[in-house]
Image (cartoon, rainbow, N blue to C red):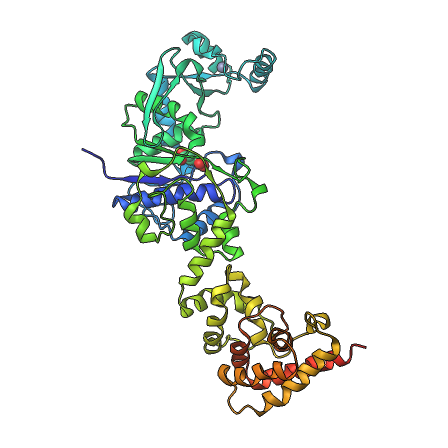
Length: 490
Ligand code: GLU
Ligand code: ZN
């Protein structure tokens, strides 16, 4: 009978969650939701020296931004708590004690100096660094003697000298390791804190984790875990190791490929929908063609057997493409809701607050298609909101135009625009198109000059619509200002 699905995301609070961590979280969350199982958040904070202040909050915030809600965790509780490893030391200590008592682990009293010397010798002999097992052979009397001396000790796991340890991975298939190559690794440190391996195994057992889905950098730790499960007579979970993510240059994803912290992408203006779609394809696919997946599609289709063994390449252009796509899918109202906080923070102080939503509703359709990042919004819309714009003199004189011809264009436009009873796209088009011909100019030259005059930008949404939304007063005033600038140039 298969166990109910319970999976966990088990980050260590040693920094800000990066893209790779969050891909692990996403795969676990999807698997839980697909299987009607539970998604558990466990904080693996047993390495107190590497703990970073505020990291746990960043973990919550990262999961929250992607909408990966957890069913059990330090903040929401659950039946298998506590979910913070530093609050579970008793469990690890009694597991270590049991392992020592049944002969699967032993106390090691070696000093850090002795271990350093040993490693130096090993490296001289070009041997892999590993514990030489001196304390494995201590007699009960020798041990008692060391204890009496008050020597601190760690607990090491007794790896069998021979044989193989194997497991079936849902992604990699059958995997085996030679025991002879494994180290008698530490399970409990001298300060009573467990190492990752022991805490991880004890907790996965106690929290009844059915599937361990994690990055393949942990693959080589798995035989150690499998041995621990056997020794403790626990049921081993199923394992699924996910392929590494690479930069385009095939190097392991790192800072030099751009931002790696998930929340940096939030700040840069990416949508969580785009991020999820992008992240899931780093190592998973439904077939060889489908690229767009909503959250519901993913919950419906996600499966471990479609995780690939080969590394996934982080392609930033692809992410941008997804972002543009998901921005285009938003309705005007939805987009307004997402950009409102940005506009509120970034538009100049003299723009009235709260920001006029009705006015934004007229503007958004003009720029919606072009928006690739939410953060571009202020740059795109601020000229609609501010009173006066600052013209750049050189931009007012467009291609194949001169100072004089630019002045002529604007002077000829003014009365035409002033005379319009209705200042809408259609009427603007009716007076401005023939004007180009009258002036002996290409429409592009006329429109370009008017665009810079009315918006202060060389690239802006369609001119007539923009002018309609700006309104007659603003347009006339700005053209007047542009003329002053042009005339004052000599
Ligand atoms: N604490 C480990 C990490 O930070 C968890 C690894 C695992 O999932 O077993 O990635
Ligand atoms: Zn020792």
